Length: 163
Length: 182
Image (tube, rainbow over the protein chains, first blue to last red):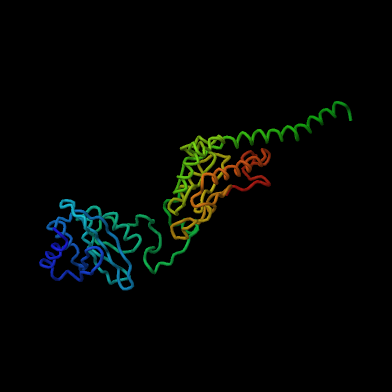
């Protein structure tokens, strides 16, 4: 099934869900965040997109984007089907987790939460993965002020501290 | 002064001067000729450290070929690479497991001052947590530069005296003229 066929099926089955189909390098469909689980389940079960290759996020001035790259191993597709959701809430962005559908999303959602601060509701164990609990801020956000820390400054929060 | 007393004083003088100086030279020569590094790398500099150990650059010429996998059997820590804040406690722990006398060589830009990473995640230099003896700049360090750093470390070891090194003092205090570990 080609990406255009998948889009045609989505338009039939989820006419309200599609927000935009932007002209980008990869075939991209933007959907509403509250329809994500329904659409993703449909993509996996009816459209054979059985492999989640990538899950990441982008910080734009007016929104966060969560980006999903799907492939079909069963059909050996080599073009990714890119699904995006726009999250307008810049303070506490939140979207449904797709870990129950693709186990591979588990750590990627943890990483997006760690570095971008997007919460995934329904994730079994959403916590920081690269940084540690107690670290303040989400460093990949555009409004994060990068600075260096001394060892002593971070010592109280760092549970890896040996003593 | 009697003949006997003069002889005794002479002995004393010998003991204090000539004898000890010679021991320093032999003792330090022995130590510098078999510095055992910990087999431990943090980032890309570790690859250069490994290539300095290969036949072409071959630091076994200086008796350093035994890279110990355990810090408890080593006396040189080559901090080869970026120290992230998450890794820093582990690095410190490895250092603290090493027995005295021990030396630290900061290899590469990252270990000397954070290098190209002025970032929230990276410790700005190994000297924040370790007493560094030799800094070797480079990104990454060429094996020749690392060997030069070893030579400097050897010079430093040769300059130490058995009288003043902290690990032979009665009290667990650093002696005058010696650098304080941490």
